[in-house]
Length: 634
Image (cartoon, rainbow, N blue to C red; front, side, top):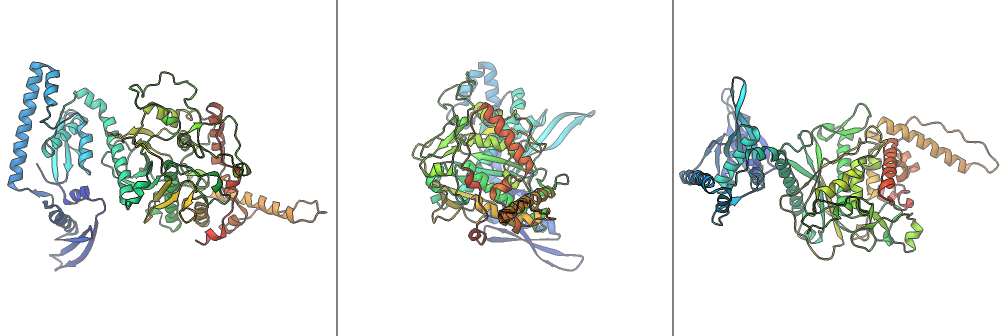
């Protein structure tokens, strides 16, 4: 068993390790470099004849002092007692597997299976690759050798690197080699024996197993981030958790590389909506505090922070880059986004009974309740079918009419067509879609696919940059248990760069002190205005010129004398700055400024309402606000 690079081993224990080169001493022919490894508030020093070895030496020193693990520049030092224990365990494992194989051939597979289920043995039927990734965070699989004869590959060798150890597996295909490497890892480190699957079924299920590994990792990152940010009180407020995880360097759908790391960039909790008496005509309240919606609004703050990097000529540090064709910003290749939700989205994706053995199969997919638009209703639990006709108005809500809010299933389906960025950011960004959605409980692949994609997949006439997207829909290995009880009225949100979470009340849509949330429309609108002068695309600028000219013309008409019937002549401005936008444009004006997004939204609404029922919007007055001078100074 060979050793590993100390840098790789330390990275498997800790994600945020910093290295600093401190000094360089000695004559020119014999230089000495000093590197410091900064971790957990401590410094670990390494000295070597070049910078690369000094960095490795610092990592090795950190492993020695923190974990009593002696690694020096790729060589592992293991005490003799550990070697004897592992050798003995390997011998026992080999003899056990031989006995089981012999007994199975004599007594048949049923007898061998019963013996494998002996309580005295540590037996698992889980896929070994999945189990290794669950037990040993940071484990990396890589194919290191291919045995070829006459140009034909006869055998592959895969190495599983786990915290300084290398475990080897061989097979006729890369997938089988990886499977066997994971089996050996579990057998030695965890004294766990895997019920070996048939080779054909192993190759056929490998892709789905890797997807499951990634789903578990994204769920672990999301749940772990909430614990990390929480001081204890946040957990008591949790009902549903949603988070968006970003992967870098992945290929395709991002599902084929289980060793790609991830980072939580937006997070939200909540399961209630605002009450009618708290509705705001100034964009100061959060209408919907369900976790998925809160996480998506927190994701908008993340996008604004990336645009701010671009506005400061720091585009290399951003995940966004300017597209030559449209002039808007696009996500860099290899960056993907994945949403984790602790339970299925409310609405159509949750309309099944998990207690039914055949809940994954629907014998009557055409029944009335399937696929229909559903709403969250004020002071109610769950969702109801959307009414056949409903026009919400500000005076109606103020007089006591209950507020309707579209279900999360319907909203996520809309994001799969129009993107996560929304109408305002569409002026600056090309559409951004989710690559996968992972659900912690109440997962049904059939119902999720219908609710989030099938209903909108046939939307026609969309602009070129928009298209219905089917994210990979996955569940985790161990579904979360159902938690009975009254829903909590609190919500928290956090996005990349925030020091702490922000707590709001679902029923008011504001913070405890009645101040607006940082993810409210008003606050996000202000961030958009602050970026306009530096990152506006040429197409957005042209649309803005037309709008400002129309606004000025209307203003001049209102100011003319009663006996003057002439139409005032207003020239089209050469450019439009943020001050003019603040003066003349409301939030609704900006949302409708991008023609492609506006047309895509119209096509989506027409398709959805023709098949699945009414899409209910909030009163039009809630979007007709301008930048508030008080909020602009915050």
